[in-house]
Image: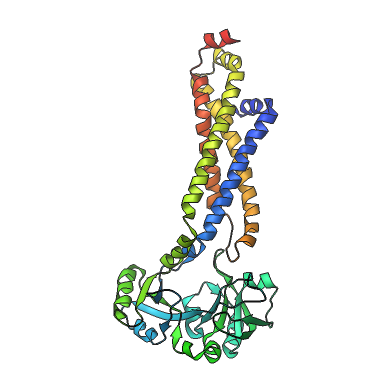
Length: 379
């Protein structure tokens, strides 16, 4: 801190250049922040997946159903604590572009399986009383301006007809990235109105295991139970199930790392060039500093200090701007929670400081090795 005033004075000498360099850091870290936020949105389901939950689907495909009788057999598998099931409804509300997940749920066990979805006891009690009742996540309710008591018509797609539901409650998530875009309807109402071929069938099972450390053996036991049957199963952890959907979109991780590497390398070039020019312009002054007693090491840290301050200011501005803008991207990725946690903000600023240190290292080494006689000869 003793020489901070000297470092700041050097940065203020070329205000335009300093501003542009800070802007480069801010732009790079702004892009970094948005990329990290988007990556988090794609991995949202993976990050919040329960460590003690398994998903059981038809071995052929997720769209192929399973018999409802499998529930009791799964419950008898050693290590299984609870079982519920669900079916994809897939209707259209007003317009096909108004997509949101619509899920037929088994009401008696759903809350136990997903305690992270928060809804009042009074609203749940009303939902249990009304066969045409439904519950919506807070994001979907806000999107369409729904409120408790509304009558919501949904046109079936693969299940024909127009279905009407009474919105009896709105659930929220216990964590910031919990999925609050879903729409839940009752299994008994679905069976009552759906075509007869859906009787006795469900889309998939959700299984809670007693001991998360025993997941591998429970997975194998469930699939073994139904091997060589007309409806063979494929069981996997909820995390693996969610990750499979992310992979269908593409290798988001590789894309983000590639763009981030290009941005980082460009930032090194820009900042390194700026610091090199600054050192060349001050060759005579650096020689004078060494003449009056500044050591080679101190000169080196003065140059690196300038680069670190540029990185700190620009990086902080960039990640804060990304944090402010990121939630607005949710409009382009409906159902995703887009935000930057504090840990990622710190990571962004840390990477900016690393870039600043690396970019300032070569010019700083050049200044440190500068001979006073050679420097004064250039003046």
